Image (cartoon, rainbow over all chains, first blue to last red; front, side, top):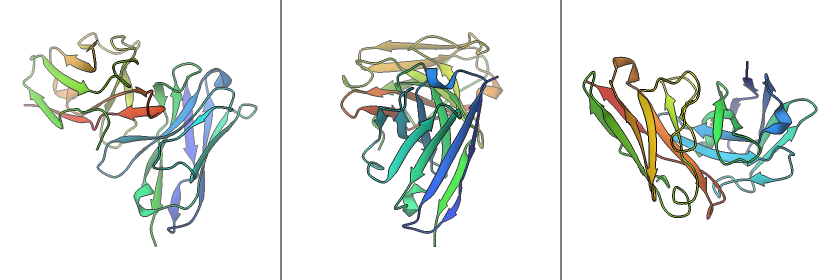
Length: 120
Length: 110
């Protein structure tokens, strides 16, 4: 059974940092690109980063480029999202997501999410 | 404002067929496959349709997807009360070099 378990969310002050983790199981982790997608309260889905199966290729939208860093450790079947210079508008539920195959062009499975609140 | 445009709401009566549209451009829907997701309040999204028109195992055949040019559609036939929730389309955008989502459509079963 495919499982994605996020952790690391919480309350952080504006300008602060947070690192999210996602423990994957039930599939060959290195065979899939992975992504992070967030959803602000009452809003739609917003993709915030993607990483190829080997961990070399990374992708970001302009909204987070330079502040967020996605990485993975295939030996630990774990995905990470380092979030720096956090802003109030980064407040959201952050979902870890498995991509369809090795490219980050589509998602086929989602974790349950972890809430990040940026507030003073 | 989302790169992909979906109607914010849609509705139908039980047993009816409803469609939800997703409009994009040549850099996204026009050159990449479209996926659709179903999301109930407080839960994670679930893949409903992938590669334009394929259903994952376990998804009822009442759900179908199609694509033409720079637009895609999700159709739900034999509408049921449990279909009342939010639906999102998504695809890759070659110009933005990233995944893009529609703004979501809230389906109401009257």
